[in-house]
Image (cartoon, rainbow, N blue to C red; front, side, top):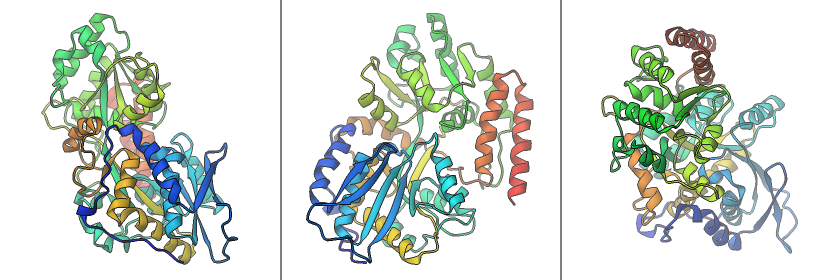
Length: 460
């Protein structure tokens, strides 16, 4: 395996180019890297990008290793046109390793991976978060241990909270992190101002109290807004928003601090759910998931959205020419001023296919994108999220990213690695549906507890 690329670089050699608008990055990377790669790509109708040799290149080497890379839609990495230049740069440095890219979506991605597992045809590398790579596939013994990557000098700079979320209960690491972000909510500023609800928003800190939230909803209703917001619960898509909403309103939690059990059935969470159920203008909508809510919010049908982050704003700014109001991102309302927002951590996992050489080649790909600081910075910027270690001024002069960086200080506990996580997510949206269909809140949270406790016991 012939690879020629530098390892870690000093921060003084940090990639000097700084974007002024977040949405320009994908095009810049595409133009900047395709000219130096030894690879060209072509996207087929299934969303898969297949590598092809450039004209005049030698015939395929018999010793070439072919890897498959499956990527969930993580910010800008949801587009193959953004990732392909990074893959091309790797292929130039390591011409004996061919990487075939496939982009997934959250509607069908899990099913596709599970089908691949059942067929014994798993991808070599998959890019997602600890809740899938560690708490699900890793805990099931399907992933290769990446602990050796964590022994590098670069890994020592990764934030402790991120490392803790990446470490499995068995002590192994089934993910090597790339980026992180903090999820938030958003409001229609134009509508808030027209309804007299803007007075309840702290514009400087992007925060508000539970009382402010209630007053704002009432003002919007009085102004004539019928559906102010939706507690979407057709499935698990975007459930980080509904969990954060409920947990923050009256200082509830989703799990215990040790991530051993679920604490949804608590007086604080029951009080929050009862508040939402009784509020005029807040609907429990069993026909919507997070992506549906985003569409309704960005079309002006909802005054606020609970499924939001900086990646959503960038996407909507580009893809929605009819967006005609000012989106203002907000922390979820809380009663005690202690904001706990849901975080997202994403990185690389390697399925253990029994081929040591391919596993090592996959690790080489991960090292290429993470150990050289210049290359790592480009990879993180392509996600439109934040690095998992300190990269000073990475978004200097970028007003949008600077605005959203305020939420990093409100990052709460990363509890998505609690045993039984897959079943807890399903139980959560089923519980919300029950409430929307008229089941008393206390009964619904007790059903959640019974279902998750039983499923977790079966796991163990």
